[in-house]
Image (cartoon, rainbow, N blue to C red):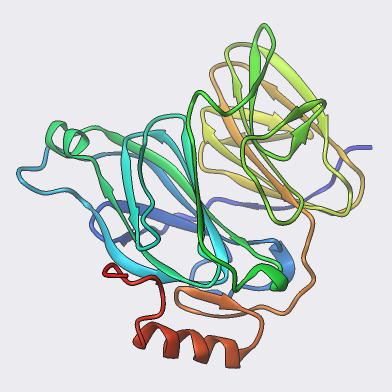
Length: 289
């Protein structure tokens, strides 16, 4: 049986993150608090295709800022982003690559366009997804996974392919190591075709259209549309008449309390207060450690 679509959204507002990311917030919603309704996903920002003109002696982006208690997953469709954090991780991810940063007990990181991207001026197109961590993992040491084009496995057929970023599709395991059950698929269509698959019925499931248009479970969707499914049934059917892309996000809810403020997501207000104490005390992997 096909999953029921319970919500369709296409928010029109956008805001700047630093001076390099023009994003629209889908989850939890503009000026809304994070909540358990989309667990394990906390936030989704969509950077729709945006042309950045050449910059002279400047790299747009966002400077060092802290995180604790969750993961940031940045999926790049077009552009180049350079990451640096205070756990001594650094990498450049480009088109069709993914940066998966696990903040855990806390770190500071920055994200800037590369010098080449900034000087030449390209189109930036990306998604950033925040994934909550189970309580038992929140205070361990930070990690970083650079998922390149070479290590993201693909399931490819004549007119479509699935890039398995996380989880498992049939017998293909995704590239990312996760700390709760998560399915994350980048699905791409080259021509008229249809793809049917299943997601466990108790999972939170969302699909974002990132290029052109598709029909999902008999609903027509366009670039920037995102749908939320019910937790009943399992079937998802996607049809495309051209070069379309969608991002499938599904995960088993954690059913744990969420307490958050700014860059910190924990389980209690007291843990949030402690995060600020630790930040002021320089305990979040200072650059001079």
